[in-house]
Structures are given as C-alpha cells and as structure tokens.
Amino acid sequence: EMDQAAFYLRFQNVEETKEENLEIIMAELIAEKLEREKDEILNELDEVYRASTNYARRYRLPKEIHIRFARKKVRDILHKIASEEGIQYRGKEIQVLKQVPRRVREQRRDYRFLAMYLNKKNILFRWLIPERMLVTWEERRIRIDTLERAQEFYEQLIGPEESSSKEELESNIQEEEQEKTVEDTQRTEQKEPSTKIKTQREIRATRRQEIRYK
Image (cartoon, rainbow, N blue to C red; front, side, top):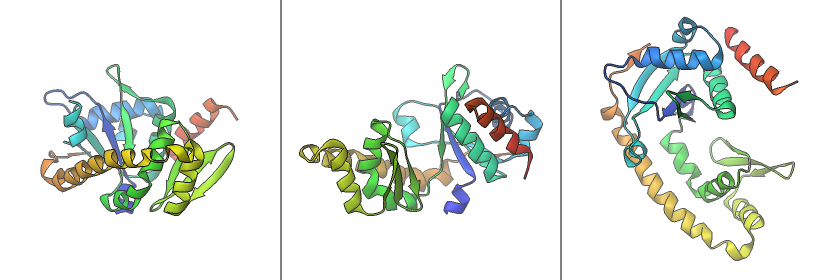
C-alpha cells in the first residue's frame, strides 16, 4: 500500500472547467513549477483524474486531482518545492498533499492529537513509517515511537494542566477519520475516467535539475 501511495500526489482547489483536459492542465502547471518542458512532464504522468472527497464537498471546493507519477523522484521533488514555494492555478493557492493509505492513517490515529498541535504551532515534524514521528524542536530532533512518549512530549509543550484538551482534539479527529474511511470506500466508484497520460535558490535549482537524471 505504502509503495503504491508513494507515487501519488493529491491537488486540492484546482478550478474545474467544462471539457477540461486534466493531463495538459496539470502538465503545464507542473512544468512551470519545475522549470521543465510540458512534453517532458507529460512523460512523467502515469494517471491523472479527479476524485470526489468529503473534504471538497464540505468546503465547496472543486474535486481533487490525483496524479500517479511514473517516477517517485519527480513526485518527491514536486511535493518539496510546492511545500516550500507554494503553487497557484488561476490566482488560487493549490494544496499539494501526499497520498496516505487508510491502514497507515489508522495506525497513526492515536498520535493525531500531537500532530495537530505541532501543525498548529508550526513545529516541524515528519512521520516515520508506519506511525512513529520525528520532531524538530529547540534545535533538537526528538523521536516519538510510543503513545506514552507522545503524551509526555505533548504535556511538555503545553503543560500538564492543559492536557485535558487532548480529548477535545481526539473528538475532532474521530469525525475526520470517519469521513476519510467513507472517502476510501467510495473512491473507486467516484473516480472519473482517468486521462493517460549553498543558497535556497541554488538548492531549489539543483532539485529541479535532478529530474533530468534517473
């Protein structure tokens, strides 16, 4: 599951138009961001399609665009650049997200109270497969590999007197996870026919350049 998901990206808030050619639209958008030719990017797209999600319906957003890339390397570079620089289409900010299988989301569910707080406070972290976390805080890297450690670190961040707020976070998480489960079960039916398809500046330029090499 994780191996398959590692080739996908999800794009939220890409405006829908009648008789749109998703393959061309996304190839042009990605080519501009990666500073590559459109035809070169077209060769990197295995599958491009829109998918209806509860999140999009709730916030009245366009259906998400899901892309399977031919090479994971290109997917990773695009996600990194989009996260750092942002990406826009027709003047609107586009969210670029990784695909996370339901099984992995379920394994990470118990840690979501901490993840949500870290996101809220702009504290850097990344998930380690399947459910462990690596947090960067006060110039240190902190490994979270048990629920007990997650709770201890959470209380260290906010103070034990506020730890009861964890229950409130968990109630919100439960609702979100229920919606995610529905999305997973409906994805196949809702899926529309697919279209076949140094300095920071120096670092980004190098990253884009890497796409040319396998």
